[in-house]
Image (tube, rainbow, N blue to C red; front, side, top):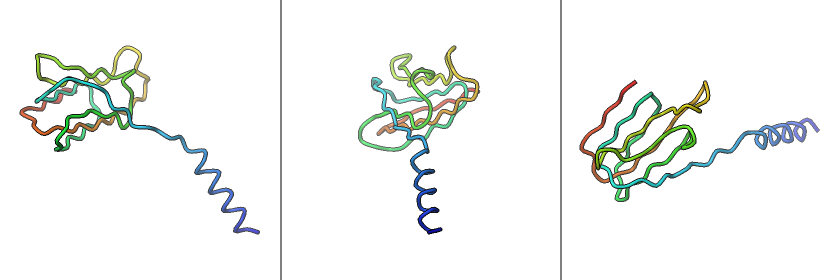
Length: 102
């Protein structure tokens, strides 16, 4: 009987955990990345460029192409919550520059 109770308890905890889906955003071609305001960015080599939010949201973080080829990530806009974690994964076949501010 104890085993069944522990199994139900563990299942209940598992079902209560929030599920987060990664969000891929569409951007143009880039060969440089700049990050302003902190956060965690992982850059991986791959054949096709992509930008994916692992934590955080495009609702609070601006991702756009500036100066023709610079992927600019501004972590928090004016609606950003007080405790906001950002984690983004970038996949690209070529990267010529990276800059971090803040």
